[in-house]
Image (cartoon, rainbow, N blue to C red; front, side, top):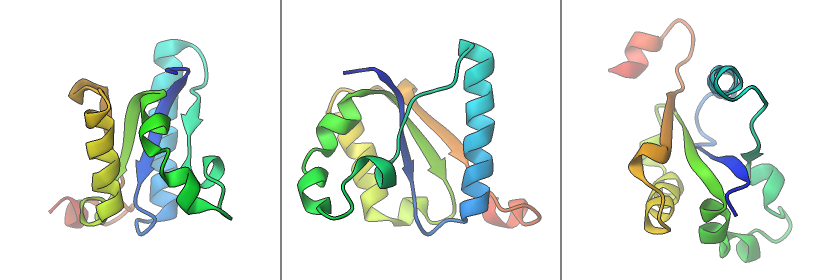
Length: 116
């Protein structure tokens, strides 16, 4: 446990390009601070897409194995129950609020509208 730097929490309904750009900003900050690339837990890569129900029961273990929760927060993030469940589970499994890193996901050209 704790070998993974961050569990990536995001809404599939937010803009993919904007999420990629937000992730790259976070990655660059991590690299500058730690001197290495981060290890990440991605749902699409780490959950067996042919047996999602079985792997989702392990969500508490997946989250507790990560040092931080990286929230790629776009306009739909807080409207998605599964995203809220990931936040709740991280804290419930002993994660601290200071280990939750929120990175805004804003589409270029409409940032002010999405912040409203």
